[in-house]
Amino acid sequence: MRFALRCWNAWTSVWTFAKSALTGAIATLVDFAILLFLVEILHVAPALANVPALIGGAVAQFVGNRHFAFAARGAQRADWRRQAVLFVLAEGLTLALNALAFHVLAIWLRVPYALARPVGTFVVFACVSYPIWRWVFRPPSSSATTS
Picture 1 (cartoon, one colour):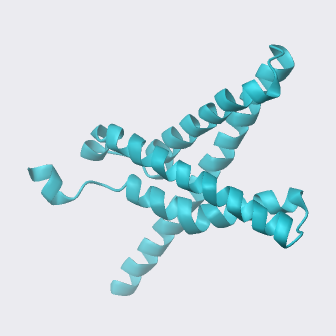
Picture 2: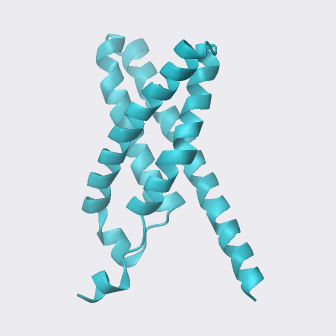
Picture 3: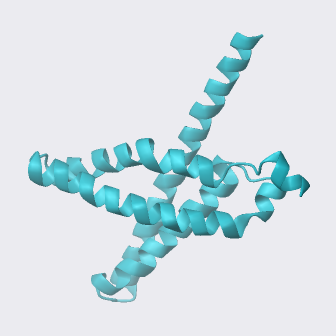
């Protein structure tokens, strides 16, 4: 029985990781679609279009992870303000780590930038973002729900 439970928990973790990665891919598409729309259709300068596009991608990332990857339910669903604040803080950290990973790979190790970006981003996602998001979107503890 314990083995079956461990297998189930491992599968659940892998499935949640895959859903979070898919959410990140969709958020990237949202970001890029907004950027293209603003630059190509509305003729906004790319530098000005960058921020609204990033915000759109971040909103898609938060909503997708909260409702799809980590499936917020019950008291966890009502806790969206705490989750949003922690998510923004986590995103600030991962932004800095993505910049560092890109710099190390592309500048110090001379990995082509087109390869350095996805490799660095995936390493930061797998080692930092996903574990932090598991904490941000965790179900509330039983002591927190009873008080």
